[in-house]
Length: 447
Image 1 (spheres, rainbow, N blue to C red):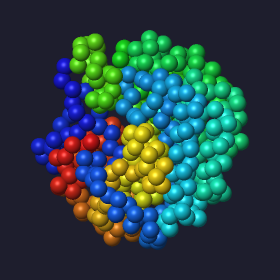
Image 2 (image 1 turned 180 degrees about the vertical axis):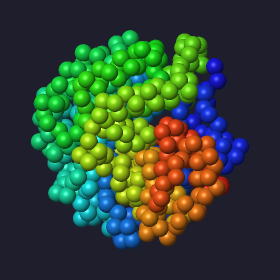
Image 3 (image 1 turned 60 degrees about the vertical axis):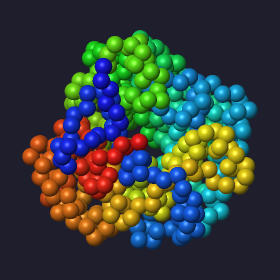
Image 4 (image 1 turned 135 degrees about the vertical axis):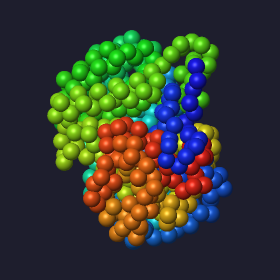
């Protein structure tokens, strides 16, 4: 079976080919394949600079906890399964040291956080004591007094009352739980350690602690998934009434167990792109009929005014994002960077008093504009006045040819003062975005 890689080779600037398997998810621009290993001088220059006064960019923090109970078949993140408690403690030592080093830099010293995201892995694998230590040390460097959102990821098996009490007391406002699907057979084939009963128990526990927002993650295209199993899962989730539901389409990078199982013939077939897109189309229609509103190409919320996702919205508008932890990604002062992906190299760098960044990319003004345009387009609508005010660019004119072609295909709708995607455009948005890249970036591998 043919497997489409996580990049697109463009035959035309505005005619994206349709993938057969897998999916492209754009989270950064320029593509990661452009980033450079030798970036220490540029990164030090950014850290020694003052915050960007032009945009008065807010500061967010991403904290990576690379531990989980069991590695899933589709997982491509840097994670360590079933770690010993002292392994976690040693990692927290290094992570806290990294955060302190950043807190001493001119660009970050004294700044208050607007949002925090604890991702993984499974951050909720930390014990309550480890959580309390991390929160205490973090807040001693970056105050939370003006915080708008604190998100904490969990999996059903890691949800306990004492952990939830610790998170709520620390000021966590948003819980995101990875359910993936509510079908025991599909969960087992995907390597998930939890079953449907675990999901329901965990969700009930979370609701009892009254967090501002509870999000449930679902996946489309899992091994063993059928149309019936997918929509039965969706109906069960709707009946649980979460504030937000986020969909992810199955990706098959080469570093996943699933990729190797496919190549070895252990799995005969997976849902193709057309099938996954149709399931998402029908899922969004079902959610809208139940009172949800689409917030982006991947998420629906009960109340758009209350159930915002500041971590995403602020990043898409140029916020500084301090990425900390193993293999984490950040964006500071117009520079992308990624940390070391090797635990040994990450720990040794910090033990020597060095920040553990591995590669990076400094964006010029046009690249910053393109970055924010393509990321905001993932939300379905781009306000042209925002780009005129911030960058002095009329994006409707700058991208005139691409917008005309996509409108002719029915993927954009005319809208005064904005670029707005139709439903069909929104469902394929990541495949459209490379058309807006600078010409030298369009044919590159994304990774």
